[in-house]
Length: 199
Image 1 (cartoon, rainbow, N blue to C red):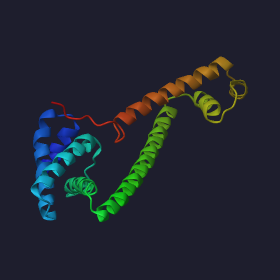
Image 2 (cartoon, rainbow, N blue to C red; image 1 turned 180 degrees about the vertical axis):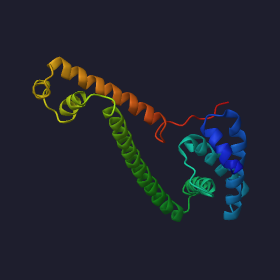
Image 3 (tube, rainbow, N blue to C red; image 1 turned 45 degrees about the vertical axis):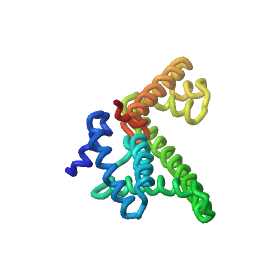
């Protein structure tokens, strides 16, 4: 396994000691990119610092998908930081670039939010599927018909041969189980806040 990938996994697991080596690897990749772009030393230093701050906040959600993925991610972050630096300067062409950059970031943020919502719905679906397999059919139907379909507890109880109190109890029990399973799935997903290295 690539050393940098091993360090990445340690950092994502919350290993504070791994951050130092991992950040040095990131620094080297970003500096090489800056040199290749012909960026002056002062600007390169600023880009490295800004990029590492972004890496620190987002590394917990980064998913390694094969050779070169980490380098590509780091270069994309460095490019964003470089563009952000450029648009603060007085050249009118750079101001125009800044508008385009801002708009593209807004679109990226919107797409990321939509993606996160889809992931949440998938996690909820998984949680519901898991709970359905653990409860009696009548208990599940009481939940579905009242919580999802909006039927009254009286009507559902008559169909399922349950008291109104039993219908409410079944609904509450299933809701608690789904909530518990969803939180567990969420904690293990890419939506969960990253555990950042401290120290």
